[in-house]
Length: 214
Image (cartoon, rainbow, N blue to C red):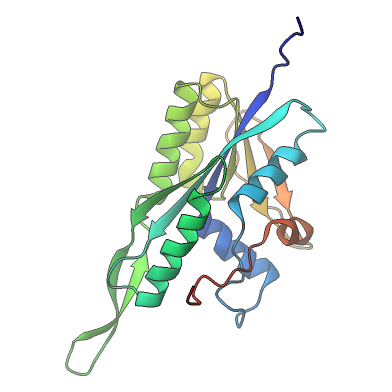
């Protein structure tokens, strides 16, 4: 009877909007189309799993969790349809789950009569939801290693809790030379950060135009 080979369960927690803005900033341009900056969650998860195999050959991607704000009725109709198409595509991928929170809207432009003609959407609670799932996942033994794709310092308490429970936490951030490297840190601990560059982005980017009509 063959022995069962233990695997290291890798769970990726993707702060999608944070990633989208950063990739556009580093690898795009102000005039880049809206499709620029999107990544394929499953390919990104596989990439992050592979990057750690030189240290831990037993790594196996168990899940990718995507966290993102959901446009409401005050968003442009095409934007909401594009969001629905994109998240439906993600949800159909193996081992990918999508977790959303409604955007909070505030007036961005008013007419001379004072009527709001354009609204500004802002993510609220997305980072809290990611942090909650990260901490609860550690408590419930849902993963061995969590890879957090974000540079949001609001996530540090949840990372600290996962480490305290005994889980390993890695982080991932987009980077381009010669810019300084930015990564999350917790006191007294060394977190392994994956610095993802243009080659990594090319391997995981998603250029599908979800704004186009199906």
